[in-house]
Image (cartoon, rainbow, N blue to C red; front, side, top):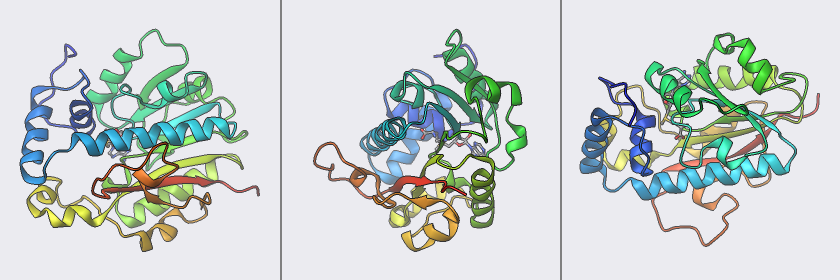
Length: 250
Ligand SMILES: C[S@@+](CC[C@H](N)C(=O)[O-])C[C@H]1O[C@@H](n2cnc3c(N)ncnc32)[C@H](O)[C@@H]1O
């Protein structure tokens, strides 16, 4: 537990609670418990989602990515990007100031991973000095872009524009890890209501338009438990679809 308190829950810190982490506040635990009362157990789903992040990041590393820019990063622990890619450099960003400060404390003294404010919808908000240090060659050499747990908080037009701006900003050969919340939550209206009116669920038919110029790998954008599984996929609701997409050579 950090020394700082939060007066509003954050989905990122609720995930930390579900993953058995130590970086959340009473307000996050209360929100997580209320959500589970409406939905059912969440820990298994988020363990699978984090395992997907690990497989996706390791696949990006195997494809040559040695630096990562992470949007909507949440809490940088419990198998997050720098732990899945320990040889790489990683810049985590988020818009939630409490989570940013938490991340900065967690990563203090780590010279390969850092945390700064960054609004995914406005790349200019990412600190250029941090970008130079932790994502060297940004725009000139391929990097891994991690965009997980974030699409649900952006409307279609904003998400499509944001992903297109990222495409334009990255060098050819860059890889994007992305996920979308499925329509499964619609079967749990009280839980859906807790996510607020701006929360976006999406059907697979919407993915190509939102991804725009990003080209999914041959694996496609599929339920995350089915994306290059390393063991028989867990029998869980398909709450999240995800995959990797590539920035093609010009
Ligand atoms: C569901 S959490 C996901 C955290 C982490 N990526 C994970 O998968 O565990 C969503 C995060 O996105 C952040 N967020 C929301 N809108 C954002 C934006 N426009 N730019 C960057 N981060 C944003 C929130 O503050 C929150 O930390």
